[in-house]
Length: 175
Image 1: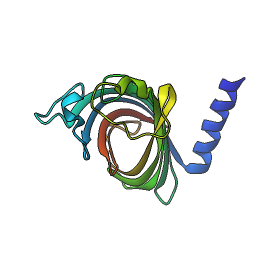
Image 2: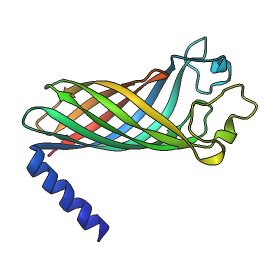
Image 3: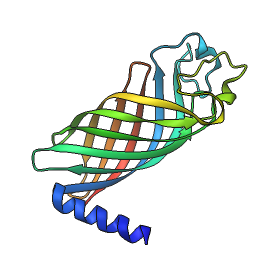
């Protein structure tokens, strides 16, 4: 029953919003703007100072664009944090879209086990402690969309916060 309600909601929203898309998200390149000395302890290091990491992130997204080119995007994801431990989270984005560029505000977060940071020298930015700490994400996004056909595209998602930047890619399908 829940699946049927979800499908009806998606179809109804596409009638109201005009254009919708579903995306498969993957990748994950994160740069830590503020480090506090933890760069030496991060996993998946790409840069010599350890602040740029390639952390795996996978998820799905749903985006709705109205006639005035305002968009709402919801993304849920799973991945690995800076010390190679699992995270689960989501982001809501609201913004303006042109044919190839999107700019918006983002809010969301993910849950991680802060106990995994013990002994690493990394102090996580989170709300709460222990095994279910919430890491808020508040910032902006600047995305670039490459359109292959009327229904298929690739989107490069760039989330910028005061603490870090995160870059992923998605394969999307318009309907």
